[in-house]
Image 1 (cartoon, rainbow, N blue to C red):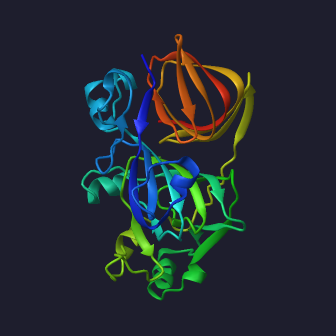
Image 2 (cartoon, rainbow, N blue to C red):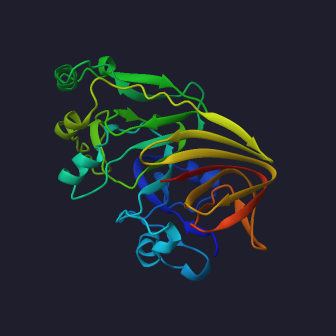
Image 3 (cartoon, one colour):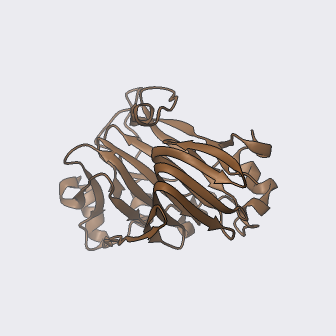
Length: 314
């Protein structure tokens, strides 16, 4: 059994830039690349396995043909999606539906609860996280009158911050932010406000006010994340969140550290440094920008080097 290394998929976005090339040396398609879909089985951008007996298969196909690698899951679709986002400009103010609403209104799509690890950001950066409306009537009023400064809450951010963003949360990353996002495998976004921006053809981008009003949590719930840190050998493990949808951790490796996972599959993204993964005598190089999956039943393995990884599982 081998780790499954994945080839990312890149998405052009009106707010994207070149940070994915500058920071991770990715071969991005253009200077407006906003998203790296790093570990994805979503039909809008499935990752391809790069190594071993499954090389060339997309992750969604592997999920269906080899369910034993994922512990014979009950879910019909691979439930998570890992992205890196380059917010070279402000993203639209948006909100995502929960599972129930998305299933009914978005052709069976999953809802979208997500979380962000701030890899880097400009000095004094902030983001939009939540709103001030106490009732849905007030939300409708402030939205219809375009009183965005009164409605939207801004919070300061810095590298290393972590935010849990449940479905129903109004939010937006802002200019100069590089983020690793762990989310449900969904591509449904309802835009609330987009700064009156126009696309390359001069058209205002679509808004989804009616859907946004329906799915937004009112009043806003703060969802402050409390992390837990523990040392294990030469690894510092930070637990950020354990939710109904995913658990997310940061592993800081300084030397050699052993891990043993048999009952769950792991999604791993190297966001800093380099090292090797050692398993049953085989050595695999990992470096900043590497993304891979540890299958169920993989057993004991070692990570050796100086590197930082964001790790998640359903």
